[in-house]
Image: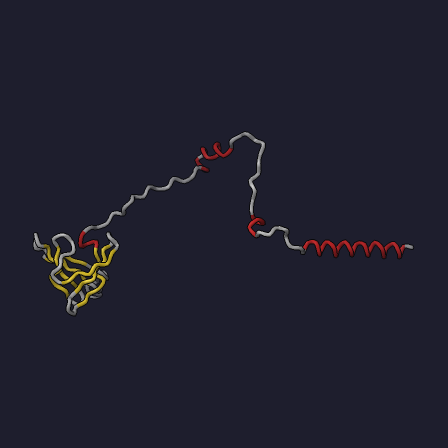
Length: 159
């Protein structure tokens, strides 16, 4: 009789174990995978506004965002431009990038690009601008001169 009782109990426990394994491997009943990870806000019965109290404490205050000016401070005129290419063949053209307007401009020999500045000379590695009013000359280089330790895209004023 004890053997028969133990056999029935063992069979019942194995059957329950098999059912629990099958039940635990079933898929979730939700059809949308996003629903599984949604967190629903909990409603509390407390009328105490703890968020306002914590936000007044300096440790929990939101960081103030620094005020950024609308336009960055930039150099103007020829100093704001970068010589990015030279076409020495006819028609002779200098290709200049203006950081202020964020545009690439093609300027021909003898043409005026900025107010009073005329392109007077185009070489394979530099160009020369001349101010019509002051007759000041401005040299813009295309490549670096490692011996003189100049910057890659340098510009100098010629007097």
